Image (cartoon, rainbow over all chains, first blue to last red; front, side):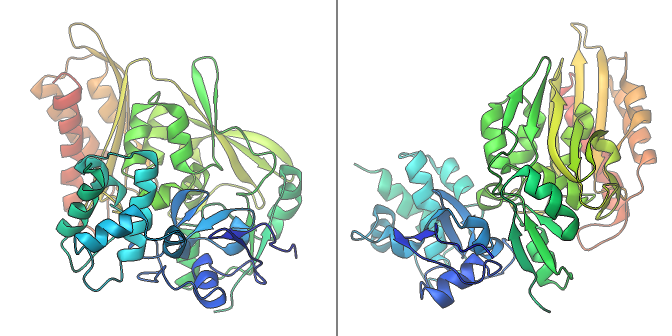
Length: 151
Length: 277
C-alpha cells in the first residue's frame, strides 16, 4: 500500500494509515479537526464541505487515498491567521443559530469569494445551493455575504 | 458491512491491469453513498489520480472530446458554452461540491435512468470511448445502459472520453425536480434541432430521462416535428407521441401518470419557449 505522504491539511503535511477512510473521518477522528460535520453522509447537506486544491467538496464522499497529493483546507484552516472575512461576517450578521451547517457554509462561501470577490445574491445562492441550513432560513447567511461586499 | 480497500491507479497502463480486480471509483459521489447503504464492494480502484489522464477537453473537427474521468465542473469550464444543453444540465447537476468530484464517466457508468448528464449526450449522438484490459472500442452513449444501474461494459472496462458532435442548430435541457439543486430528476428532457427562417424544424433529436429503464430517444416525437413548423397542432402531436413512447413507473418522486404528464409539458415548454412555437 502506497503511503499518503503528499497530503497537506491546513498547510501541515500529514499521513493517513488507511487510504479507504473517508476524508471526513480522517479529519475528525485522526486529526481532531471537528469543524467539518457529518450531516447526511450522502453529499446532500454540505455540512462536511472542505476545500480540496481550492475547490469545495463534500468530505464525506472522498476517500483520503484519493486526495493523497492534495491540499485540504477546513474551516479551521481558514482561521489560521485570525478570522477569515467570511467568518467575521458570519459573526457580525449573526448568521449561525445551531451552528452545525456553519463550517460548511463558510468554506463554500470562502471558495465563492476566492473566485468572485463581489458576488451578487444569485451567485451567492448558487454557491451555497449544496449547503443546507435548517435554522436560519438563509436570510442571515445571505446578509453575512452581503457584508463582505460592502466597502 | 466491511469497508472495501482502496487502490489508486497511477497511470492508464496500471489501470488496465487493476481494473478487473475491483470496482472503479472516480468522484465516488454515487458509489460511496451506495456502499454506505449496503452495496458490497471488496476493492475500489481509484481512477482520479492518473498521471496520464485524457485531456479535459479537446476540440476536434466539428466535435469535442470530453474527459469522462475529470470532474464535471472542469469539463463544463473548459467547454465555455460550446454545448448549451450539456452546460444547462451540468449547472443543475447536484451542487458545486458534487460537480467538483462527479464525472461524466461515473454518471454514465452508474446508469441511473434519471442521470442528468445523459440526455444531452444521447440527443447529441455522443460516442463513448471505452478502454479496458483487452483494448479500446467506441460505443454510442445511447447503447451504454442496459437497465437501471447496469451497463453493457465488460468487466474491467471504463469510459475514458466522450466525443460530442457540436450542434448545427440549437440544443437545450430542462428538468423537473423537487428543487433546482441537489434534486434527482422526476423527468428530464434534452433536445437538439435547427430552425429555418420560416421556423421549420430539422435535425430534431429528443432524449428523455426517468421515464423508462434507461434514458431513451423519442424517435416518433422527433418525426412529428421533423420538417414541420411548431404550430400548436404539430406540438400537440409531438407531445402525444412522446407520451406514447415512454414507460414511466410510480416511485417516491412521482407517479407514472405525473411523469407522463410532465414529460409532455417539458417538450411543450421547450417548443414554445425555444423552438419557435
